[in-house]
Image (cartoon, rainbow, N blue to C red; front, side, top):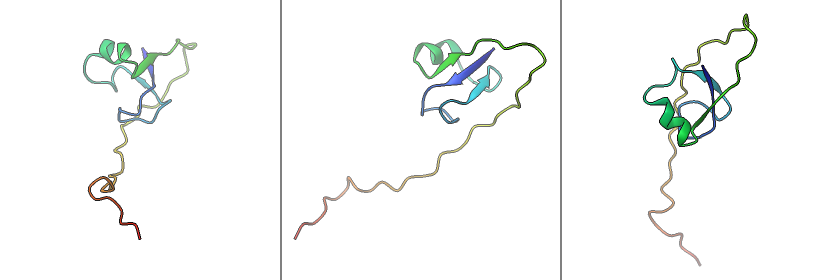
Length: 71
């Protein structure tokens, strides 16, 4: 079965199609939580390449540590 990623909390960008081999853990929980959705089957003979998860870039978000000084 194939699934489309609906969440930004997984290792693939939103809208990416993955199969159950790409997903680890309980897929039913991912579907129920709205992270992925089942994609309707397409005609046989068409195959997709196996996708690897993408690591997000680290974000330097120290803006909440100190308030900005105002003159």
